[in-house]
Length: 121
Image (cartoon, rainbow, N blue to C red; front, side):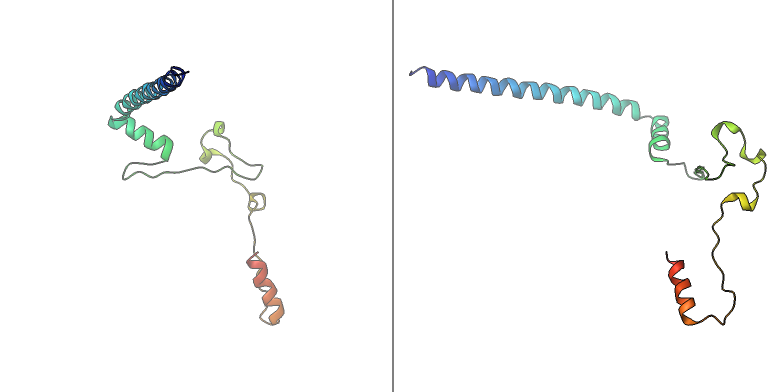
């Protein structure tokens, strides 16, 4: 019984040491991986490519243009070529949002108030 207590403590300490050594080895491997990645990204061309692809950044004097997908049936896909060569879309087919205009100034306060509320909807 006198040896059991120090032996159990010694085994517990050894298991903690092993777990700590394993964590240190994992951190060392992670550090090596990050160092290798930093070397790859340290060149100017790699930094520019990373900035363009991941953060949509451009060099001074350049402009970023993003083409958003359309809602109508005349949608131009990526494979359809130059959008400047596509036929024109009629205003009726473009799904333009129209706002009602005031027909006359004789409308009452309540009508103007309702139109104002509809505007903010």
